[in-house]
Length: 166
Image 1 (cartoon, rainbow, N blue to C red):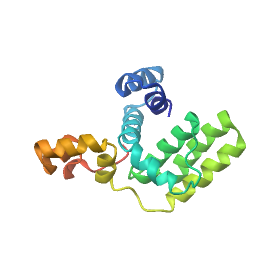
Image 2 (cartoon, rainbow, N blue to C red):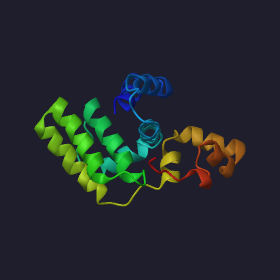
Image 3 (cartoon, helix red, strand yellow):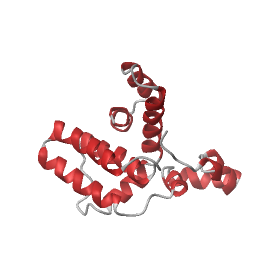
Image 4 (cartoon, helix red, strand yellow):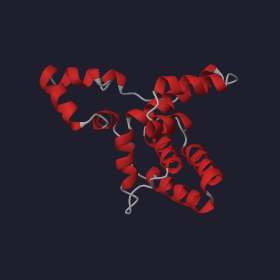
C-alpha cells in the first residue's frame, strides 16, 4: 500500500518506489514480490475505475485521507480485478492498516465499504484500463492509430486482459 500511496499522493515514480520497497524486504520470496508488483500496478492502472466503483457505495464521496483512500484502492484492486486474491485477506489488510493509523471508527468504515464492494460484480479490466487514461488522450490516440492499436498500446489487447495473482 505504501508504494501506491507514494505514487498517488507524492507523484513518485511507480517503478522506483516499488523497487525501493522490495529492496527493504529482501526476505520476500519471488512469488510474494511478483504479487506485490502486480498489486501495485493493477491498483495504479485501474485507479479511476476502482474509485468510481467505490464512490457508488459512498454517497458523501471518498475520504480525502491518503491512508484510507490508498487502502480502499489497493483492496479494491484485489477484490474486483485480481482473480485469485481473496476478499477476506484484502479486507483484513486494509482494515488493519487503517485501524493502526486512523483508529477503529475509520477501520469500521473501510470494512463496511469493502464488503459492499465485494458483493458486486468484478471490474471489466479492459474498460478499467481505458477509464484510467485521460479522455482527451484516448480520443487523440484512437484518432491517430485506430481503436485496436490504441487498445494494444494501453495494454488492453485481449490476450493481455487476464489479471491473476501470482
